[in-house]
Length: 84
Image (cartoon, rainbow, N blue to C red; front, side):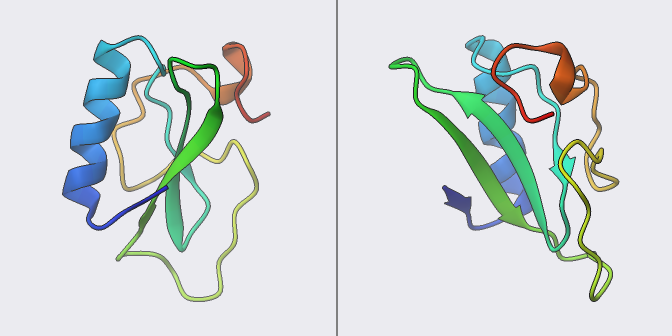
């Protein structure tokens, strides 16, 4: 799933955390930010947002905290079903 703007991604992230579908950790893959979550039916997916401040040519591995987001959630390896 691709959000059209970082601000929309923040709104969706906040709602997912409020609903218990996610801990809020955002991976900074660059050139996208990725929020892994599980929907109410158990489908695991990512919400991705193009990161406008990404460094050209940089590709980070899964679990890399996003520098463009306040990562107050736990590391993805600390919850069930997340990227490790």
